[in-house]
Length: 90
Image (cartoon, rainbow, N blue to C red; front, top):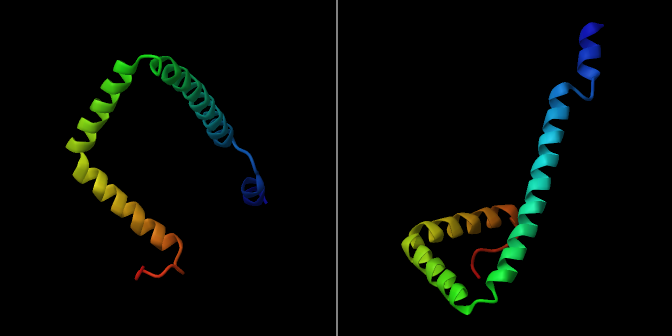
């Protein structure tokens, strides 16, 4: 009888912890997005900074190009596995 009661409990202390953690993460993501948007809007006023960020992104992409291509191919294969009705001969 006691085992049945333990199995039927829907919420435990761990559940409250994970739900709270998820809410905290969601709040941090929301705040982070708002801050990033504000930073991008402010930086966009200065063309040299935008140019510098573009150069930095290009250098990073060139340096990590093999890893980027490998990751893109893995995502492509995962997408094909997700939609099995697609033909591979296109």
